Length: 184
Image (tube, rainbow, N blue to C red):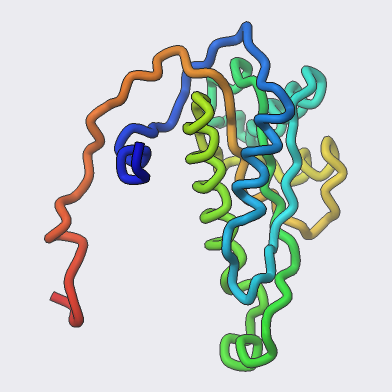
């Protein structure tokens, strides 16, 4: 399967088989895909916390709910494992700091790229994923020992999908989102 086929077939999974666990070897392959992701100035501004024990998963499910009780992941208790993406201080070249005055300028994009690489590796292993961007930062710090001031940017849910059949993706046509050499 070529890469564009993977892109066409991979979808966010929100229904997981609850009777299967993911071998740690496969979780480490997924983390390796994130570790190998390019980053601005090769700063690798991430730390990945793999959450796979029942107790830790329950704590994470609690942290995914924000103060008003809202969650974008009512299916979260079905998930076999999660990966928390914690933004680390980026070490960038002085010229970048001098120009942008922001050492973290590229960190969130780098984390997003690492997350998508992990999604694609998980898909290649027959797993489903869903990116969760809502969490209670204070609970993340408390439950997982994340230092204050280090943001848990994303959580990646990983498990065996109930339904792995591809769906037709709704995407804007290329001519609406792409132009060459000049804005059109």
